[in-house]
Amino acid sequence: MTNKIKIERAIKNLTQEELAYKVKVSRQTINAMEANKYVPSTVLALKIARIFNKMVEEIFILEKND
Amino acid sequence: MPYTILLPNKFKKIGWIILVPAAILGIILIVNGFDAMPIKAKVFALYNDQILGKRESFTFINTNITNTIIGMLFIAGAVFVGFSREKKEDEFIANLRLSSLLWAVFVNYILLFLAFAFIYNMAFLVVMMYNMFTIMIIFIVRFNYILYRNSKSLEDDK
Image: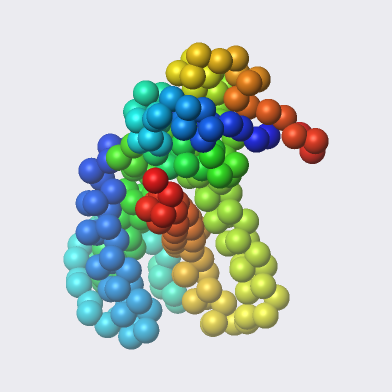
């Protein structure tokens, strides 16, 4: 799975730290997701989508091997 | 979801303060033999089986408790360090902790398998002594190394 967190963050002009604070996780978690090293739980994916006012599918995208 | 069974974050620091000296003393003890630095004391024994001696249970015995103390301190320290909450405990950290635990058990048994195959007699006894602690050691090293590596990558990427 890949995601557009970094792009959405740039659009909203949020730092990793600010996004982390809004969804109550560590900055490491945001960083790991952006680097595609961590797949978030459904709860966290929903929270992130809500911050960006988008559907989950618009931010998190399945890849061929998923 | 953060796990509630973890100890509060401050135990991690306390853990390091106990673990490091206990590890150093433990290595000194293994190198110098178990009778180095004896501390004699009367302790309660659920079961005691002396080499070429009597077997007894539910009794008080006089014995050298240096390895008892160091072993217990090491375990307490390692549990505090390994099973305390991080400052910001979240699902990614919880995931990392579990995967490190799996990794540690896996690596530990590969090492033990090799030790069974290639190490014999009294030397194997030493392997067994180390093996009581290696799962926790590998777990702590791997978990903290990845945490450290991730915090490093945070610095380059703002």
